[in-house]
Image 1 (cartoon, one colour):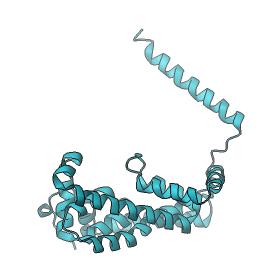
Image 2 (cartoon, rainbow, N blue to C red; image 1 turned 180 degrees about the horizontal axis):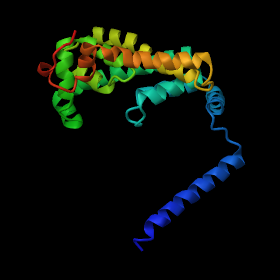
Image 3 (tube, rainbow, N blue to C red; image 1 turned 90 degrees about the vertical axis):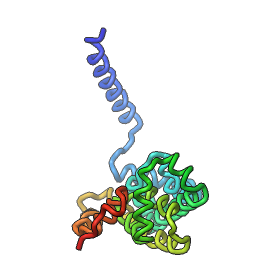
Image 4 (cartoon, helix red, strand yellow; image 1 turned 135 degrees about the horizontal axis):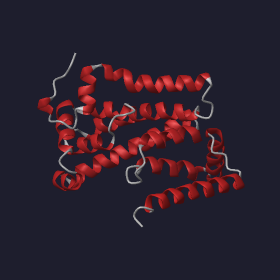
Length: 231
């Protein structure tokens, strides 16, 4: 039986693909980016204002839904367009950041560390020494860690007003990069899509050429004393 098990599994997978293909063809579903965009826009339009509220809620609670921000923000641009997707995505990031900050500040260090582990100590130590600068960098950069830096700021001595000001500015920057990309995703050969792709690559990669930026952004998980700022 064990010798035939791999063959049975492969046969089952092939059967599932065959059934899925037949169902898709029978329902005339369009899984191209433009087809998905049209379907999602029609669905959201039917919800009215509720659709925007639901999207913001998804951005806020994306961590609990195991959804990466890059996917959620790209879908926002695909559905709502670059401008409105940036507005909603930036708002969701800001609310999520304030929620995580307040949770860490209100619940306290001991409870948070028991729940999330000692690796948050690195973020706390770095934010303690750099203040809101690290929060702004990690929030604005497309690959920066969001929740850990916001929780770390809550555990550190960062004041409320600077924190809120930073995330209100940095959140829309991150949201715009992905929303602009998502809005142009249905036309991958258009100049707009090429510009959106180049913008994403530039914003994500070019700052990493600076050693000090890399140390601040990705060195948060290490003790602050072990990091040497670069030129």
